[in-house]
Length: 297
Length: 307
Image 1 (tube, helix red, strand yellow):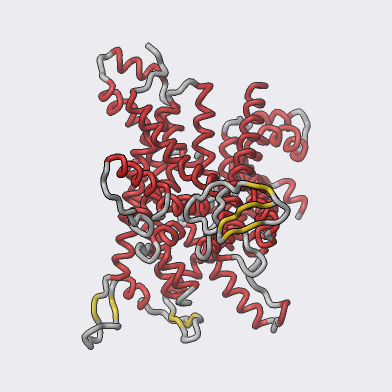
Image 2 (cartoon, chains in turn purple, green):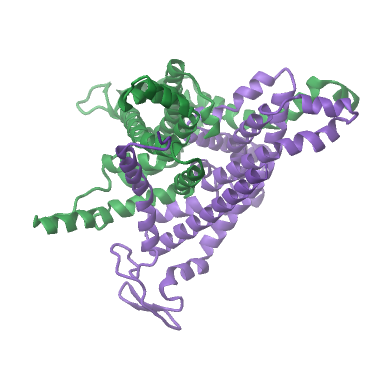
């Protein structure tokens, strides 16, 4: 009996579901090459290269970048580069902090006993069981109430006044990222016996050396995958950012959302395509690294 | 102090867990308490919060209205109850549809040759890691009057010689349902796959040896053993669908208003934070109740973390 046999119905359903998953993406990429600026109907590819962009009505006849016209426009768009910069700054800062404190708490919860342990453990599940919008408006309420009070109390004026911005977005991102890091690292720690660390201690290593030479190498894969998960959560986040951002802290998802409510040119599709390519290469790279690691062991 | 820290295991634990616990306390728990306090308050004419203790916002949410047509002092206005009900049914329908679509695919991957499984999973992850907003946009393009779905339908109609008027697909409840299914499908595939993959092949062989046909094997072996995955997936799908407002905003237009849209508008357009806070707490309580009864019935699997 072939263990990998699947019913034809299963195979057909699988193919249909994969088509469902990919058809929208294929359409998105195709329209990023649309010659029509209105982007309502696909009017074919931009046919020619030229020194300056030649338009005929809303049709692009030729462009310095040829079919890649909208990608060049994208690179020239200051709002996009600024939003991309903000997105990366927030994601990198939040990931570093969330990974460090998340790993610390995972070790504490898995290896130590202390008074507030049940509370610490329970609070990790809040972001999983509570809708994001509830957390988003909660953070907004916290910041606006606190800032309102602080601005009045210290009589702050002008640019000294506290307001929503990069800091509030980053701080809120960390709050929903940390539990994922902790849970992933905790799961990894669960797989390892405490006796490794106890052996190191018996052999005379102090806590710090035990951590650096025994615990940390063991949990490193967990820490890395937790960090990666946190990073992608931050890049992808819309709801929390939507409620906690202010002037000068627009991220890419917020920027795209703003565009979708106004005017849609093929530039949005070009931006989406670049995004998909970046994510695709990142996931592929990770996959290759993981395969290599599993082959070594 | 330092000496005590070095000696007391309990203090070391507290010290290590403190940053995370404090962070979550300040940014998740205090905001919930604030939301609760404000939900009992009132909106001032300039859009600020007046702190009072009244249940007016909750009463209004469940249909009590003082804004009546025929001069009555109060009447029942079903607007908000309808929004709550619409959000619940949409979340339910989305979850059911997602399970029926995810299950065969997860089964296909779990029963594939081990060397190919990662590639198939990878193919599920790519759309998931494409940004949420971008995925909604992709469906806006497909569902438009001039979009691919109408183009395909039009071509088929022309072959068959039927007159075809492009369908209005965008800005309908159906569009919102499709968008929700698309957004959250991968969150169901991954946990179901995780629990299906754990099923030992010998169990299938045993079922076959004992004379079970494929349907009986599915009902008596595969489905029961994969329930933890289905439960975890349901939680990962149901809760976000209840609270999402972008999908209904962009694909439903003014047609489909969900509780997420209501909350968002109270905070950003109407500037009625007390009413928005009350709606937000009702949303939280609704999801917690559903999750509680659901997990009590079926258990809370570890699959939720794996995903």
